[in-house]
Image (cartoon, helix red, strand yellow):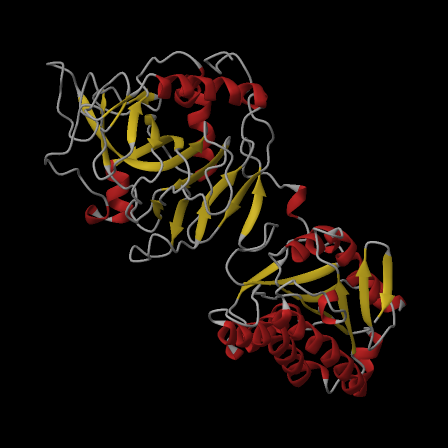
Length: 247
Length: 273
């Protein structure tokens, strides 16, 4: 790991303008070159699109602009945009060492008597399950699968952000479809871990409690960092107020 | 708060020196907690007093009134030589800050007003601010020169005091500073929408700036600086709107004659405009 420690890892992070993305970028942009993927609101951090200025001396350098992220607007529901995101990341940095699939959507609906339930089912499964898979496969196809030794040396890694609702049953939440999508993502992560091992890329999933309502968002971003620094593979890490455990 | 910054460092009025600049959909600056709490309170109290003086449906120099073309909002124009906290916006240092920030070689001509939207005001059109304004004096001097509606009409240039020399200039920088509003939350509306195209729906901006008290948005007026008021569904929305100006010749050279507009004479009110 001594070589790895000297280089700034490249992280492709989806859902970057959400609470988790904001926390991760705030704490770890010194450690990663971050490709911050967002749908509508650009992340509120320095990037090629935005920066901090001193209103009384607007030309002066401002230290807060160090470690700016590379922000990319994309509609990940469109497969072509998934490909574009990966291509942009590779064109900008020449590699991707960590993929964090944090973009997600949820609809709180009862199964019976809810309008647009199936339409929302499709949307949730597409963004919460299919998109992480598409991005992972695209990275594998375009970059990772012929670099087994390099991947292992660079400790390359995918973190899929699932939910505690995907590994435990919480009734009366009207989050059945969302929870099912996260259960699918958790199990898919285990399978990906098994298959991606062939070319030296680790895959893990997080199953956090609701953040920031029940646990601090920083606890979740810290867990991503810890997983990335470690060697775990095929784990689904449950994050609760009292601590972390494996599902 | 002292009404003039001339004897003070502007930095003592600012709460911090970290504003955001964003490229999209067009270059703009956004800052929250702009002034110190003490400074903000004094400006807010001044505007609150103005609101409490009542609203007029007829143009009125002394009150918030329906004096602006194309909007159902109430406006009150800050007169030249105004005293009190709002005079900060006519201060040379404030003018310099905005001009330097945006990189605009401004003339010193400046127009400033308080805008007040009742709850449920109509959304504005997606537009840009490249209009002509008229000012006292034969030509720009570079010193701050507030619009003086007792002297000449800001939008038509009609001279109200015979023999007064006037000149025209083009709106170059827009500043919108939000104040005296209830706490804002998503869904309340009243944002300033920023758009890529003039044809974008008002309700679907690329970026929306919420009317959070003591925050502001600043941008250079170009033919592509499309923005609009988004309807305020839950509460009133009040702001201070200010324009710096640039020479007409420069605007013509840079953008072409057709890029900027001259106000058409119609039935629109002029007393306060």
